[in-house]
Image (cartoon, rainbow, N blue to C red; front, side):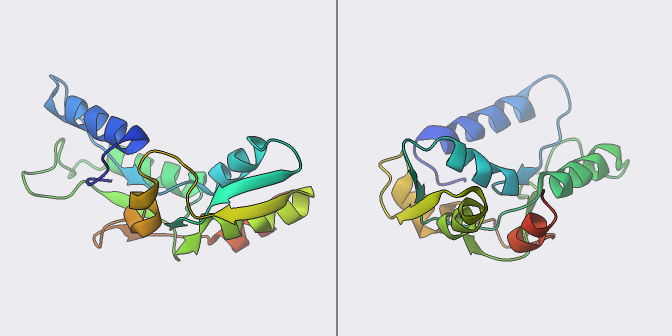
Length: 154
């Protein structure tokens, strides 16, 4: 996310900077795209086909992120601000996945045809396609995988 040049990624960078430079202590946890986000992509479809980017990600369950946030917020030893040069903590799923492939699994359940697209015309599409949505090497990787999560959904 640190190299985003447009759209959501830049907005998140500004939010982080403002929170960390504000008068109140702040702890930030960056998270990969949620498993639940895949369903939102399908909900935004127009017509009978959902066009979903072929972007790599390490999809992570909302519950996993919530548990990590609680741990961070209640850890008395966690710094209120990351030290200069220290990366912001990140959490992501246990395996690299392609968002369109995950959408295809969910789409099959919902009766929605999913077509993966290489250029969705979104801000920073090239950045995302090149792995910009993947976490840094210091990220905490935690399950379940998208398939494991999907198997638990009604």
